[in-house]
Length: 270
Image (cartoon, rainbow, N blue to C red; front, side):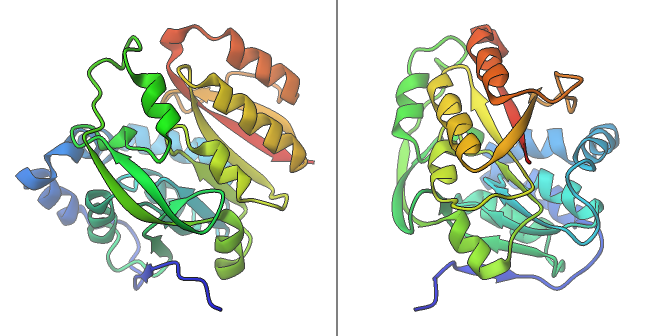
């Protein structure tokens, strides 16, 4: 039986739709993503840093999965590098943003779903004021409750959304050269839905959910990823000059101060 991934294809046009970005910025109904649009779009210096950073993982013609695409900022970088992008995002407003901004680009495929451990449906916890931290992980919501730096965050709505897996995406679209995972504490569930080794992937972690990061590292090791590095926040630079072992990366995560907040761990296979 064919898998129901609810994807939308677009015809190709090089570059994103700048008019769509401005239209979203001017729309009061999209106010919750205005901060993200302001930060990620029309920022040439940040674009250049992002492209230079991701060029290590994405080459022209490569297939890339963007799991937790938010407003599509990484999509833009992957496309500028010549990658073909399958973007997975469950939030209606973010889906609208991606549709509008990348309308006309046949090398961007939008899958309206959560990516997790199994296919079906999952409960999704929405932060209406700050959709960046909406999540399918109830443990993440609990960990944020009362934590320094997170006290103002409120998850005030819930949705039942379609769930797919990395294995299902690979079956449908092919094996990617790189997978970026940024799903607010649900990263270990995403990796649980992968049963094969890939060349490279990244997953976000936070200091309020270190246990999830350690589970992800264990999963990455079991999938034959052997070299690791980390980039904190939006610095677009690696913390280690040389790639390190899974044990060294686990120790690094455990030693971080709470104030470090978040980063992305990068994994290379043997």
